[in-house]
Image (tube, rainbow, N blue to C red; front, side, top):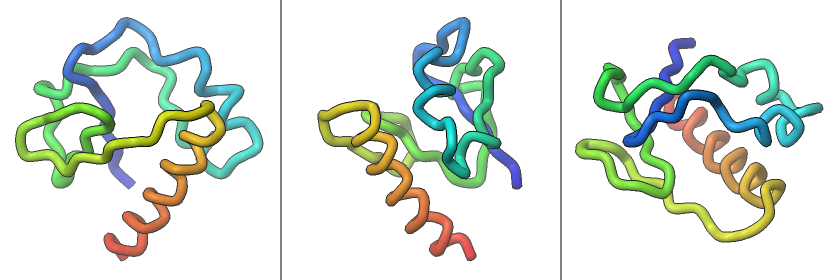
Length: 86
């Protein structure tokens, strides 16, 4: 499985909140801990923009709420995406 990550404003490190939030989930093994790359430097077959706009990307707007609620919302969307890609 190829994966890419990045942002319109790339930061120097990934969020320290992610490890504890994903602990005990199947997503934990896919956590990328290296510094994010700028989205403009990434080539991908499919791009999903979370809570931002990116030219040519599918936009996902998330609901306000706790980290856990956001995790669960994104998990549900990723399940749908995985079925689409199968």
